[in-house]
Image (cartoon, rainbow, N blue to C red; front, side, top):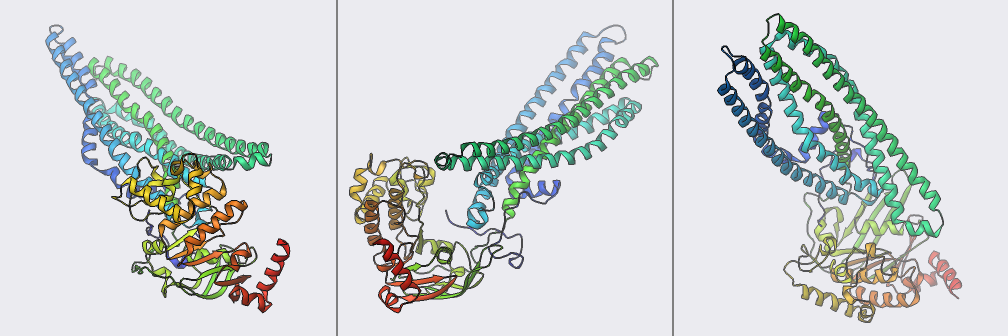
Length: 632
């Protein structure tokens, strides 16, 4: 998946360095949120005028009944000279035809709305996921992973429910109220005024009630996100929970999150019930008033029997949307709360962006240069203090230093997972900020300390390193593992390339030892394999990517001796002829490097070959002597 540049919502000058934070909700108002939501999902409005035309016909069809009832009673049943059966049949047949037409229009409204809504919300989900993917790891860490996933899934579902049902029903309800009001005024202006006088106070009350409901639903969305985050974290860390015997403590934390969600849900439902019940009460009260006044007007001769009955039907058409409107508005508040949380993600600025004039660099031996690089994490002191470094091409470089010295930060800057606060990181003399993402990811590959594997086979995970395409060639591959396999390459050819890569890395015997060879399933996050075996697959993946510069985070740490030997041999093949930067946690790695860079408290204190630094009697010499003493 190629990186893209998100549209910034604030200027770079307004951002703290690497300090973007995913806010809980967007600060937009209700209607501003709806407008922004439509802008983000323009497909929702596809063919909206045709849909609205059908909606008008569907709403208009509902007035057929009261009109038919009035004409049937006055001109058919109570006609002069006795009941006119033929007129009753004709009017009834016309009403039935009108209702059928209205039903067909309503069905077309639903079908068209479902199609456009799902297209729009699919775009919203894709944009939200794309944006999350573009955010730096530091920014992603300001929100729990489960809560972040909830924004792209659960919160979008709340939007879907409203747009597919509530949005069009709100418009239909408004049209129905207007049509009903017009016909009621035609029959009896006096009764129409009475109806509106009864409902106006409720409309004013609903404005206040909706603000409270909006706040309640916003809290619900936040609580649901926190609950999903806590549950997701506990499921992923289940082994640690059991190992340390903290199931009870973890259970209390999850129970607390569930209880907080329950209280927020209960509060929102209580408010909804109160607002909805108020509408039902007023509707029934209005109907009772109309029955009494209508009967009185009918007795006085101001209204015919058919007109009184028709007016009662029209009151039902009027009060029905009002009652439904309260429920629709409640759903709208829930949707707005979800929309705000999704928009908050999309409003989060992407710190590492591709420059408009970004260039593609030619392939070849990679030279890395740092010039006066300074970096600080959000709210903390400088981690790197004006670091300058020149790493020649085809050189095996080991970066060593105490924990927290800044060596891992250098690796992240070289791979442009972060940008420096000051200074420049160059690849072959070009500022990384001027290099296109596609070119950078093609030339520079990071192999982390713990290789991440997708749920799929060893073959699929290794083939993830193949460049250029959707990966349709790998039959049966999971969607994540397929991504990155070259288009147009036959599945057997991919298998052959992957098998050759394992052979060149000296791992053929290990692959044969697996239950199903290359087709062995690695499980979720690769948990069916050991940590060392996961690293072997990650190394093969990096080998297939064929980068010019490899950045390794000590791939041999925390593995058994036998696997360490395999990894070391594989790394020899992987790094041969390539520029390599290794974050060395073991000084045995530094001993085998061409150049050792010693980092201490954010500064480069020594550089040179291993033997020269040992003889110099400086920081590295003391570190090496201490390490040798511990290994004896």
